[in-house]
Structures are given as structure tokens and as C-alpha cells.
Image 1 (cartoon, rainbow, N blue to C red):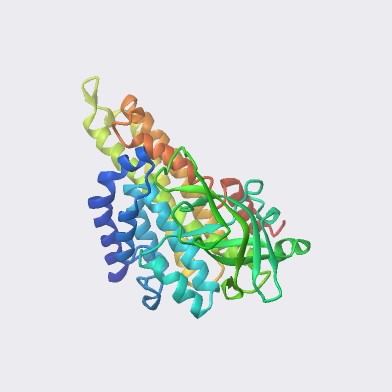
Image 2: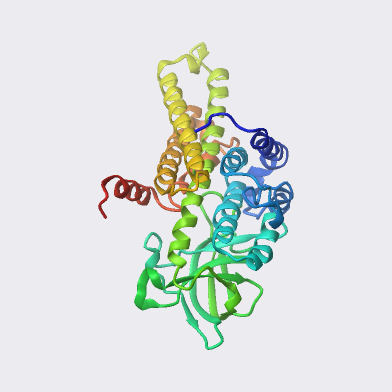
Length: 382
């Protein structure tokens, strides 16, 4: 692993930092309060290449690598977790899935508008009755004589669902085959038979719109099947490995924001005639925060590096996601505690960081699922 970043990687990091500080951070609290989707910012991020960092230029992206993606994600997440959630889904779940498994026509048609920011993409795997157990899905895709499929069913917790133009959907095309009976489809949300449910009122990442979606006799042409029929579960799991690197990056950025705010407060806040940062108990918390933050950062970069080698990186991604998400939850908790009453107040961003951190332990594989992935790899047992 090379610990030196290239000029191109540092350049995309600087671009992300610039928009994060100038455009995103000043409005993050307002978007969190209103729950409004930050469409203008997302479009600008797309124009800057941030919605398709690993997407080749021929499909509208920045043509960068996984390390560049991690560096940029951290910058955006440090300013606002909700913006980084939208960025993560577009990059790793949507664009990455189509780049790996889509054909040339599908890439040009469905990746380009997402990568350049002119449209929003989404990823639909979870259902009301099946979260971690994705093979228990009830959404059905019935093949027709002309090769098309008719889809009926529901999906839940769809990030960007309320605003998405295109959705990468997974549905059961052959129930008798269980996991091997799942197929991936490209959904155009403007076609008949597609319905959006209410936007979910979430604890955190409130500007990242989430909803349930429903299909009623929705017809997908044969040209919009992604990959091979029956390979959907394999596609979904491969895409989620990359997605976990995105969430790990998000957690690092969020944790860094809480940590940096705490350092400033520990120096400036006075109690009993001295800065609270001089108290041994506060110093212990800061030291532990620093250790957890650095571990999360370097494990996330290791996972991105492993991905770039072209080999399987499931374990590295799971280790990074687990470590970073739990570090973010712990660090934001300690940050609120150190800030005391001010940490609990909406006058400061600490309580938002705390609320946002929790989701990183849940979506794209809970902490329990990450531990299962890691342990199965280590023991060879299932």
C-alpha cells in the first residue's frame, strides 16, 4: 500500500473540500431542519465530478480511482452527512453496479446522467419484511414471452427514492431458486406502474430523502435487465462491498468533524480557572477519539486500495465499515458529552453529528452483519 497520494487524488480532494466548506457546511443545519433534498448542491457536485468519481470520462465521470473517492467522501461528510449519503449511493451502489455489470448501451444511457449530476440514481434491495435477509424478498418479476418482465411488489428505505430518475432494482424472477432466482433491473421512474410512498421522517441524515417504492404491473423491457438473469444477488452483494467503503468514508468524515470541534472547545472552554482540555479525563477522551479516528481512516484507505487491486475485498470493506461506523458513533457521543449542554443544543452541530452517526452502523449492512462477514472469512465456517 502506497501512503502517498497522487496529484490527481489530492486535486479531487481539494475540489470536494472547497464545495463542502463554501456551499454545503453553511446550509447543512437548514437542510437538516427542513428535510429538503439539496438538489442544487447535488447537481453542482455532479458537474464537479463528485457524483461519478470512479466513472470513466466517456460516461460522464471523473475517471478517478477508489482512493480519490474516499478522500472526496470524507470532505463532503465532514460538512454534512446527508449530502455524502446521496453521493455514496450515486457513486458506489448505482454507478459502480452498472459499470461492473451493465452493457455499453446501459452505461451510456443510465450512468452518464447520474455521473454528471443531471439526474439522481437509487438502489433498491431492502423490503419491508427483509432487511439483512435480502433473499427473503417478495418483489416479483415475471418473464413475458417477448423477454420483458412485469414487476409487482414493494421496496423500502430507498435512499433518494423520492427524487430518483433511475433505480437499480433487485426482484425475485424465480422463487424456487431462492438467491439464484434474483435478477437486477434498471427502473425508469417515469414509466407507468411505478409509485413512491411518503418520505420517511428519519432521526438523522434528514436531507437525504428516503421512501418506500411500489410496483404495480410495471413492465421492464429485456434491454433493461442488468447482467444475467438470476445473477442479481451476486451483483447486489458485490456492489454492497464497494458501498461499505463509501459508508466507512462517510463515518470518518463525520467523526473528524466531531473531533475537530471538540479540540477547539477543549482549548477554549474554561472551568475552575483553566481550559477543560487540561483535565485528565478530557485528555483521555481526546486521546481515545484520536486513536479510533486514525484507525478508521487508515482501514478505510486500505479497503479502497484492496479494491483497486482487482481482487475480492469483502473482508477489508467489512472491517473498515465496522470500525469506522462504530468509531463515528463513539466519537460523536464523547463530543456531545465534552460539550455538555452546548453539545445537546441545536445551536451547535454536535447533536446533528450524533444523530447522523447512528445510521452508519445500520445501512449497507449492520454492524452485526459486518461481524458475520469478517468471522466467516476468518474461520471458513458458515
